[in-house]
Image (cartoon, rainbow, N blue to C red; front, side, top):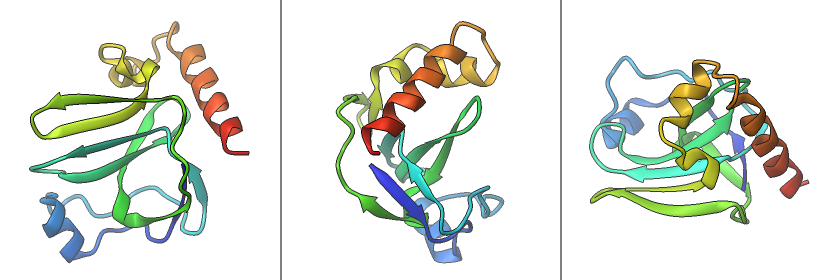
Length: 128
């Protein structure tokens, strides 16, 4: 799945719909840029709604769906659906279901960096 960024900031209405704190307003995104979606999370409550996970250098960037338009609607063949709680669902590659993968990756754990780099390359090539 590929998306194009249409805004890097949430409106007051969007923040209210998603129950996002007032401090969360701007994301470090490039308006007009197309991104490959690594995973999707859906939930309720604070930060509720649909969240896309975009690739960063050594991290995944969670961003609200409302900031994007979908330009390639095909789901990744690498996504695995997992019900995480009564109100949350994730569509992620199996690698992201490794315990604390995102936290450990952002801590630069050496064994996870090549796994993450290969995952991102594989997903990018899937939509080329």
